Length: 433
Image (cartoon, rainbow, N blue to C red; front, side, top):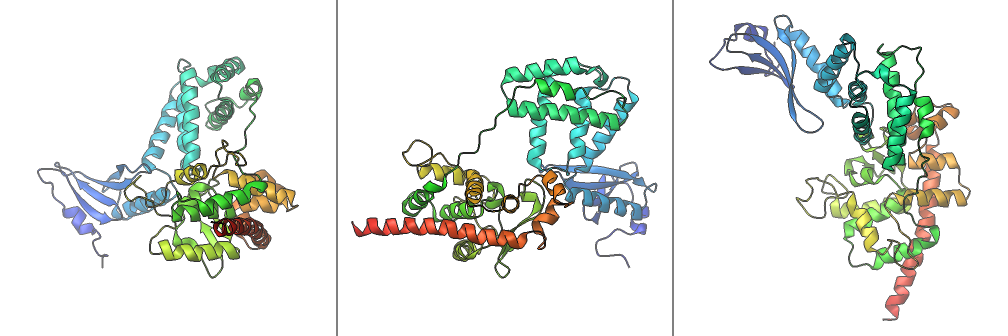
């Protein structure tokens, strides 16, 4: 017996044309489109990552049977769960097939195909940055018809062009992308493997980039920070908790702002951050020491009836169900930590990761354990440790999770001491009033 609301073979075969096209739903986004001329074709309706509704053509009936259409629909759903837009993937394949048929292979077109191949494999923020780099490539190489015409001289001129723009970090990434596009073209047979990647020499011509660390607090100013946090009348209670957890756990601010109560395990004392919220695209576990656990229990009495730990401070602002990432940085500046007040350095939400790194290093804590606690260890470092997976390393108990739990307890105690010092100062100030 067919499942509820599922199409049957008989329904499909007996479907008659009407005065306008219509669809018969099979469920899970799968439809049979019946045209005014009686033609029947399978379609998948879905929403892309940018929220736009799209229709993907699977094939015509009876060339594609009901069973085959359902199998194709299942595979398309799997791709969507993996962050791959099947329509974009199909267009990328067609573009590459056309490139292979044509004599001229445009660097910019191969670049767009390379970018499409990365969808679902890297974080959305990374894709957005790569699009910015591709825009520079397209502007400079707009008149270059064939990727085979791109040589060391052309890339030397491109490097000089990028240097004049004074965007050293983006220039470096852009040149890396040209190299990756080249390797992609070689693998697709668009370029001879015998040709050396011209980026190898051109990248040496880029202006050197010296990165500036994110504005951060030195350990000596933590007491002043907690004092300001305890006494300021301009900070919303939910924002206070946001800043405290940011200081204690040093997570990425995007993952912190999107945290859901369903991902807090009070019994096991673990804060789970899912892969879609993490820069490295891996699930991440944060062990909870006594103080952050107590703070979570306090916050739960305020926002526990909602899905997110930190709901927006004003309903209807921004369209999200969670707090804006900007709120934390604005609050830090409001506390006076903007570099313009004596005894108060310029600081930021992200800068507390730098603060934790410095404090742990000065106090002789294991560097690898600290890196793992921050979730930003390089994969090359993992390989040196004999590990094959970042996600495995960050979540498995046998791979320093207990060491990270010990570090979390120590760091929480270090900050609690400064917080209590600030509370004592506040009490003394109130006693003099």
